[in-house]
Image 1 (tube, one colour):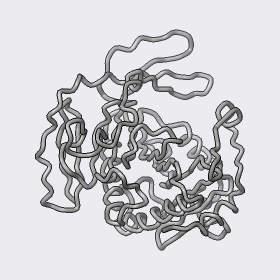
Image 2 (spheres, helix red, strand yellow; image 1 turned 135 degrees about the vertical axis):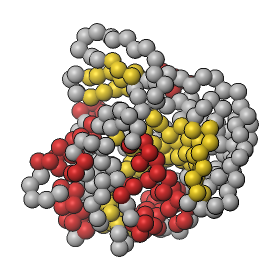
Image 3 (tube, one colour; image 1 turned 90 degrees about the vertical axis):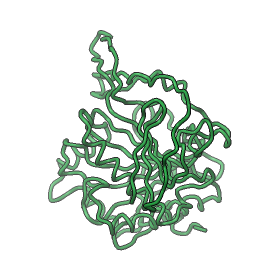
Length: 352
């Protein structure tokens, strides 16, 4: 893999990942861009023991541009990526977290305010505007995995970063702002609530690693959707969403960089198969969130077990699951689809 680091007109990093050693990324960004925004402010919620980022500059981010104005398509005047590319990663122009800090005033009461340090990156899976992750070749998908691994290792070493999160939002129903196939990476200055909750549960578990024990039980049960030598994809017994799949490596590793070359190569065909099964359920393009759960930089890292959570909010061909009162206000999920039935439907879905 060839890795090429360049910079955009406002100083943000742009990194190309190529399978070919002769890839040329000498083109420069010709735009006249405004100064980069200041980092968000973090406000502490004492009732929930959680941090909330307030990033006012994100109100002005690009929203659903036409295909000929897509900032992730290479080479045109408004593009974030000057050169043709296989996989490209760049610092988000409208980041939730950054190291470009300013002055932050305290707001009083029991809340504390501090700079939202960290980093947010955009990962472009392909230069093909009309593609999707499910349509990537195994080699292209594996290159994306290599980019995730590279960025996770790099961002985890930055001062103040506590957790690195790689994810993809797909579909207008999910709330995307750019339809071009891409994902994002957040380098948080704190351990996220879900990760802390999972690792604390793992710390209370008796008899072994909680994640490994869940995987071992699911591999014997009726909810497996797909599997190969190194990975298993299954619908969890207590799935929160109508169609939710967790993808685990068979070996406990803390994060993507720790995957072996064989594990990285084996992930691509299994994952794209699961995505095609998701699209095949109702014969429509399914909106989804794909979220990598990785070990934090330091917090209870020995307990973590890398896995991918994939879920859609579509529960029927013409119906969505909205996170309304119970889910949004109480965090108490009510699922409309029996997990065993969801797994059967996914196994039987057309994958062409």
